[in-house]
Structures are given as C-alpha cells and as structure tokens.
Image 1 (spheres, chains in turn yellow, orange):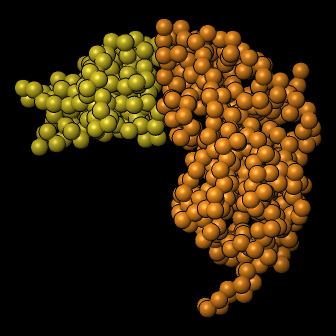
Image 2 (image 1 turned 60 degrees about the vertical axis):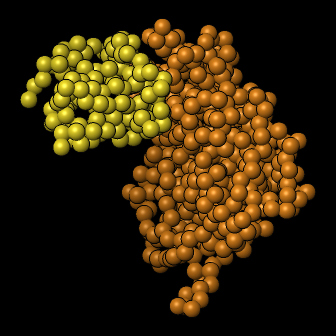
Image 3 (image 1 turned 180 degrees about the horizontal axis):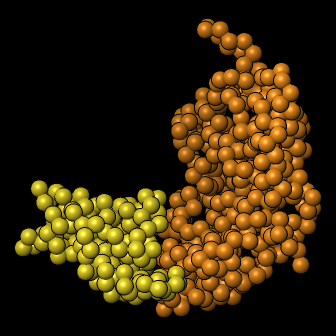
Amino acid sequence: MRDAVQDDIIKQFDGLDWLDKYGLLISFAKELEPMDDKFRTEENSISGCQSKVWIRTYTKDGKMIINLDSDAMITRGIISLLLKVVNNRSPQDIADLDLYFIEEIGLKSNLSPARADGLASIIKRIREVARREAN
Amino acid sequence: MTDFKKDFPILEKEIYGKKLVYLDNAATSQKPGYVIDTISEFYRSDNGNIHRGIHYLSEVSSEKYEKAREKVSDFIGARDPAEVTFTAGTTDSINQVACSLEPVLKGNEVLITGVEHHSNIVPWQLAGAKLRAIPIDDDCNLLTDSIEITDKTKLIAISHVSNVLGSVNPIKEITGIAKDHDIPVLVDAAQSIQHLPIDVKDIGCDFLAFSGHKMYAATGVGVLYTSERFSDIMPARGGGGMVDKVTLERTTYLDPPLRYEAGTPHIAGAISVAAAIDYMQSLGMDKIRKHEHDIYSYAREKLLEADGVTIYGNTEEMCGSISFNLDNIHQYDTGMILDKMGIAVRTGHHCAQPLMRSLGTEGTVRASFALYNTKEDADMLIEGIQKVRMMYA
C-alpha cells in the first residue's frame, strides 16, 4: 500500500544525481533534533561497524515515539527520513509498515546487514519494539 | 610518465558515471590481465589435483604448483622452497603458526607492537598467550628502547608495514634483539610484500606471512615462510596429502612443505601468486618502488598542505597507506561522498582497534596506493576532499 509520507520523500529524491542525493540527505540530517547526551548511552546504542547510532522509544497516547541519532551525518540523514515515516504511528502500524522508500530513492545497498550505517539493524530494532508494544 | 593502469582491466570501469580512482589497495589490489589470464588458462587447460594422480593433468598441475613455490621462495630469499607453504592468506598463515606453537605459547607471552592488525592479535589470544605491545610515540614510531624480554616471552610477532598508517617498522632491529634472546620472530608482511624488497635471510625472521590478493594475485591464497630451524613443528591441520603412514593408533607426516598443506590447496591461487611475481618483475621491482614512492610522497604532501586534514603517523620510512580525518567530519561521511565521486577508500577502524585507541579516534579514512596509482589519482583525492568539506560546511 502506498504511503503519502514515503511518496513525498521519493518525489524529492527523484531525478537527482548521486552527489545531489547525498547533499539532500545532509540537509535532512541538519534538520534532525539532536538527542540529549544523557540518552546517548551504551544501552541505547545499536551496534554498527562504523557510525554510532542511538535509539530511544516510548509510547504516548497509543502512538510510538522514536528518537534516533548518530555521530555520522549520512546516517543522521537516513535516520531523519526514517523518522518522518515511522513516528507518531501506532505500534501495530509500524510493525506492518512497508518501508519501500529506501529502495526507491536508491539507498537499498545501505540495507545490507554488513553496511556501515547499520540501517538494517535500526529498522530491525524499531520493528522489534513496535511488535512488542503491539502485543 | 609510468602508466601501469592499462594492464588492469577493472581500472577502466566507471563508478556512478565517474572514472574509478581505486585507493583501497591495502584491502585488496586489482589484478593485471596477465594474472587473470593465467588463472583462466589454468582452469581451461591444466586443471588436475596435485601430488596424487598419475595422469597427465595431475602432473602438469603439480609441476606448475611446485614452480610457483620455487618462484615465491626466490622472491623472498628463502634458503629452500621447502620453507614456503601455501595457505589461505595472511590471517590463515598466522593462525597456523599460533596453532602449531600453542603448546609453547599457552600461559606465556607474545610480544607484538602497538600498531597491529587484529589478525596479529587474536590468533595468539586463541592460543592462550598473553600479549604485550611495544609502545609507540606520537608519530607512531615503535619505541624499541622500551622492549622488555622476559622468561615468559616465547615469540615476537610484528607487522612490517602498518595497514593503517603505512609506517615501516624497524623489523631488523627487532630481529636483532630477538636473536640475542633466542626468541623466534614472525613478520606479518601483508602490507609490505607488494611495496618493499623482502629477504627473509636478511630480515632474520623465522616466520613470514603474506596474502596473494594484496600483491595482484587471487584471493584465498597466501604464503607462510617457516625457516628450516622450525621445520619440525607440528602441523596445524591434518588430512590428505600431508601424511607418510596412517594407522588408527599413530600417524607419521611427510617432510615440509607438504606436511603443512593438508587437503587440496588453492592450486590456481598459488599459480596466480607466481604470475603476479612474474608481472611485477617484468615491470622491474626498482621501477615499481620508485614510482610508488613518488606517488605516495606526492599524495602525502598534498594532504599535509590541505586545510582541515589530520594525518596519522609520521615515521622515517612509509609506504602503502595514508590514514587521515577531516576536521569535524565523520570518516564514514567522508568515505561515502568520495565513493559517489568514484574514489574508493576505506573508512573505519581497519581491524586495528587497539591502535585507534592510541590515536584517540574511532576510525580514519585510509587511502592506500598500488603500482598503478598516479599523481592524477592523488589530485582526484584532494579534489574529492575539498568537495566533502564543502558538502558538510
């Protein structure tokens, strides 16, 4: 099923060359609210090979709130897009969500498990938490 | 102008619409057409299992394999081809030594350096040895004056050239110290075999390990040189092709080198190593070294001149790799943008986490050079870095 937020992201990346795509990712990275230092703990970190990623989740009024941050800008850019898509939905919605925008904007290679930004691990973690909350 | 690029088919490739600038040679080198053709030709016309068959193809393959051993033996200055064993790579070579020496190493100590790759750390830990590292100064010179040998020190295991910094370690000074205490020395030559002249007799080491794929040969093949002084150590692996007599009670082994090559080896790989040596020698080793030295020095100078670049390591002799970071830009972010410009570098900890801790960084960007790199490649890197800085400004 198509999703308006993802379709809008895909439109913004459409027709850009590779460098411009990464330029756009960097501008999304700059929009992302930094996570408070006190939450950047070992416990909240998702292990990746090269860049550090921290995650914090809680539910409010039946919606799942997710905070993510990273020490690398490209990863922050991807995270920023991901949050636009997944935030403020019910846990069940998130668990069922098809994240097709990643492939369509050309970031599919970032999803391979060995990939340095750990995008696959981030998505896996979000889905795990969502499923747990949904039950 | 020395143009070796034309010999390497992959270097004609375009990446994201940009001409490929390959600067990840410390991870793996590209292969010249001559090596690719040799491998292909082996499977097309010579392939048979070695040292077993009485048929024609087995004999041809055996002869080519043993010729490859002789070629490697000459290339590293071994006394006898029997000192040369083909392995799966540097990591495998070091693991085999660790396994063979385990009875001696267990509960004792291996002296390494502060710049080692994990493959010269973890095998010794698996063998039950404690590690002590020769410390480094701020420029990453080894502080050889502080080498301390104790009764527990049973082996010194050092890299010839750092895979991160490109620093050349004073291995002859260390083998000299080891000799005074009658301690064997293993040299990890993964990052030097393709750049520097190697003579195991001159170095005075007992073990030397390197990989084929970093010296223009196939992946999955490597070399372990074991000096004749250690020709009686127990093999790390058992199986076919390495035994004299087998009974259920007791097995006796063949003499080296076959003793250390259980099972069917990477025959095509070994032959590719010989082909890579032929290729390098046809260009002239001195010519290659001069060219590499010029390009390396040029790239380093340009990086030193560039704004906002921190370079790690500054030792008297350097080759291969240059590690750096751009101020306030994560190494991963630098690498990703360079990639999109067609420039292949490596980023991260480079399997040297203890060194990263000493350098006070999570990781670096590493540009590493091979014989086919040019000043233009170095210029493209500098241009790329400027673009990266602009993009994150």
